[in-house]
Length: 264
Image (cartoon, rainbow, N blue to C red):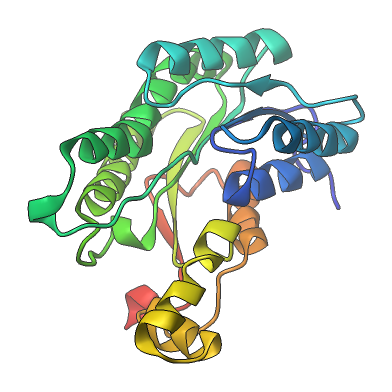
């Protein structure tokens, strides 16, 4: 791969698995130094650090265990990335959680947690990272929103509200930095093939008495016209474009990677 991010430093939240890990891997292949963040089993985090580190030519990638629900830890994570690399050029806000329930039964603690992790953490990370980017006159902020940041679905009240908030936050920050060499954009994926998403297929098949293939296409991916998963690498490639050269004119955008969901 062409090393279009050579010399740049990136922090990616929620990057010990799934979309975040895919972005970290692609960024490292493109020459970036990457700090990982996220929860998971110790052996999985160690494997992620070793894998990304190998791409970076070091024993293991830097890692922050910061809890995205805690603003002080988010700020400390950004400071740790700047200390580790001497700079922070790329911030990818990817961490997120989900909970599904009718609104009248939605646990208030789940609402608070989803808003804190999926939305407020983006604000705290951007606020902490932006002064350094402004001082260096360069930066790329990439927020991983969702198709649910642009349209709604039932029973996902907190997630939809948070992801709509991420899109709004992206636009507002983009306007504030519009006259600088810094950009802020959002990526809005549809259903992405990750272990957590794939685990939803079997219960749907059992619930509706159909095969897993039918459950995937007719139920889980009902709103996704392509009727196929979005692959992690497809989202990562969009992030790489936004982080790389030639993307400076893209600012405040909410870019769909959703198999045609928003076109329907």
